[in-house]
Length: 343
Ligand code: SF4
Ligand code: ZN
Image 1 (cartoon, rainbow, N blue to C red):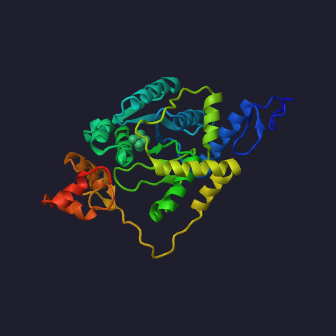
Image 2 (cartoon, rainbow, N blue to C red):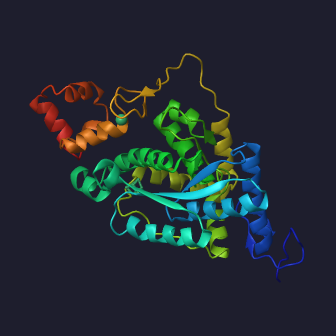
Image 3 (cartoon, rainbow, N blue to C red):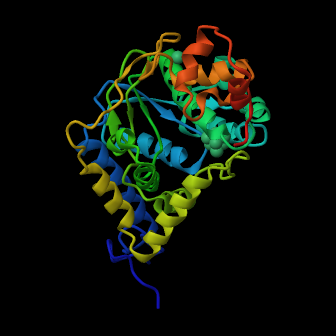
């Protein structure tokens, strides 16, 4: 027997909300989903009227839903925001070139300006070339560090006030778990914050309006709204450790759907004992970007690539950074260590 929507009680329910278990019709689901994002934005005062906001768009489901919902809410509630899209081209043949085509279509569909910044133009390296040098084990370290800075640089070119990213509840919960498993207290403390203030010059404040939106609901929203998004995985995606955290989280969710939001709440309520040493934020002596070391991670990784010593920025080689950068010769053993890509 058809079940009627538990919200409007008129229409036939089309889905069971993964987050709450409610049976809803399509329209009531759209409204519930959008209203929750609106509440997230209002409760955390994410935006101010008159601000220019760049949506980090990859062409994937999260950022496509984010762009759509931001446009709907901006109009429905008169946020007074000027929205635009910003995309990073990592230079991954067969993946990013195709997903950027989706972003370009989104630009037309949502009538938003689009800026694309590429690794090649910013760093002189594409991810295809980086993978050739570093192999397929540490490539995501390079990609993640470069992307963060690339988004900031693009946002500065566009002169936007804020960047919003499509990180969803599953991503945040997964990151909490990962930081617990790694014992990374500094990141654990930061990873649940919904918005960051500018951490220094060249760093644009960021926020996550989908922080409490479940991945499964984002997929349903995109599906029922027939949004145009790209769903292929990156060809260089080896991140095995994160994969285990993700599988673990999905297993927990299947037993108890509230696990995702419960993990986020646990992360939000953790406090770090006084006296625990935290990295001190300074600026990179080469490029001026924020860094807790003399050189930012991006400059160290780049230096390693340009010198054919790809492991320079991976693992604990801080002792050698100074030596390399002041052009002191390395011992044969040290060179060997930094050259090898598999360890
Ligand atoms: Fe970059 Fe790794 Fe993501 Fe691919 S999976 S886009 S290499 S961070
Ligand atoms: Zn730097």
